[in-house]
Image (cartoon, rainbow, N blue to C red; front, side, top):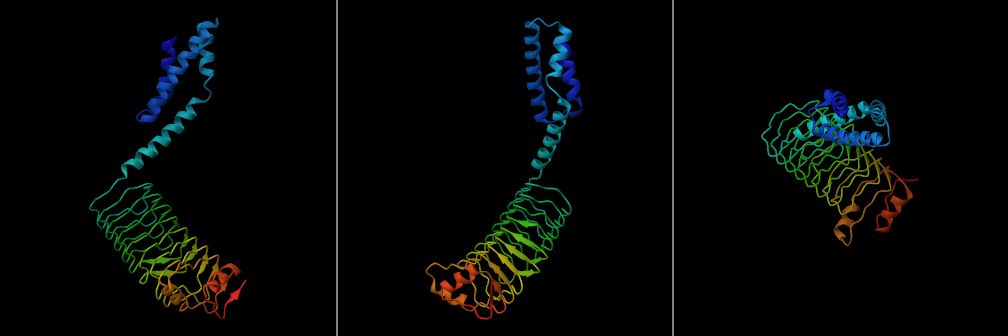
Length: 286
C-alpha cells in the first residue's frame, strides 16, 4: 500500500515536474502521507481505509501544486533577466515583462523599453541615452548615477522610481503622475516636464534653476536645498511642500527669485515660505 501512496503522489505531481520548489513539495508531502498512513494502521485501520483517510487528509492538493508550480516558473523566468555589464545598444525590449531585471552598468543606448513591465528593475550606472520608456511600468525601478540623456518617459508609471545623481539632459517626462520619485542631487535644468503631477517627489539638493513648472500640481514635494534661481511656479498648486535650506543664505536668496504668480497653496506651505522670509505676492492661500 505504501507503493500505492507513491503512485498517487507521482500522478498528482507529474504535470508540474521540472521546478525545484515542486520537487521539494513532493518530497515533503510523500513523507507526511507515509507517516499519516502508518499512524492509521497503528490505530487498527485496515490498509484500504488507512489509504483513503490518508489521501482525504490533504484536501485539494492538486490546486496547491498548481499554484506552487506557476509561482516557481515565474520566479525562474525572473532570475534569467540578468544583463549586468552587457552591451545591448539598440535592443528591442518593447512590451517585455522583466520584473526585478538587472541591467546595472550596461550599454543600452537607443534601446526600446516602451510598455515594458520593469517593476523593481535596476539600471544603476548604465548608459541609457536615447532610450524609450514610453508607457513602461517603472515602479520601484532604480536609475541612480545613469546617463539618461534624451530618454523619453511619456505616460510611464513612475512610483518610487529613483533617478538620484543621474544625467537627465534632454529627458522628457510627459503625461505622467510622479509618485514618491527621487531626484536627489540631480541636474534638472535641461529636463522637460509636460503635463505631469508630483506627489511625494524629492528634489532635495537638485538643480532646478530656470525650470518651468507653471500650472503643475505638487503635493508633499521636497524642494529642500535645491537650486531655485529663476524657477517658475506660476499658476501651480502646492500642498504641504517643503522649502528648507538649513543655514544657507544663498538658498533663501534664490528662493526669493521663484515666480509664484497666480499659484494656489495651502496654509502650511505658505507658512513655510513666510517663515524663511519669503512671502509670495498674488497667490491664493487655501
